[in-house]
Image: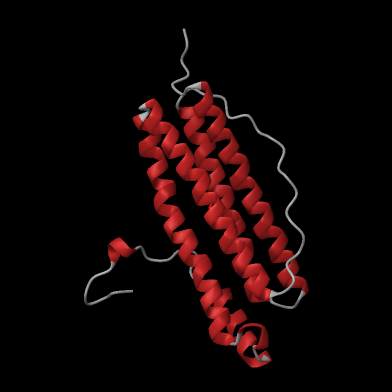
Length: 184
Ligand code: FEO
């Protein structure tokens, strides 16, 4: 009897996404080491914490495949890209990475629609929502650096940015939570 409730293409797509999330963790870890080496301890701390979030995302996919009777094969994780040139480059690449990840998640949602696999469709909505937060978080990094002066930021403003990111929360509010009294 086949007890795997996932189609083979769906199982493979979810495994591929597990690897993508693990790869994201490696990217944040690697960028964190780079930032640490450049003296930005607070930014490094933020990136290390985010690496753990990506591992959590991978674990959710692994758990889901197991719970549906599937086999979550653990694949090799590609090496992270080269170190960024500077903070602007780092934050831009983090944003691009999140958009790329959103595209991959949408592809799984599309597949679940095609297959009428409503359990996976429902499960993946968590990731759709999470990506709104992840992209916003990355956009906020770009905005904060821009306000600090971008590539021409002074040491003082970079010091303040580094400190702010050390203490920054790991998640942001969703637009669904906004009210007229509290728009952000
Ligand atoms: Fe797991 Fe940053 O998305």
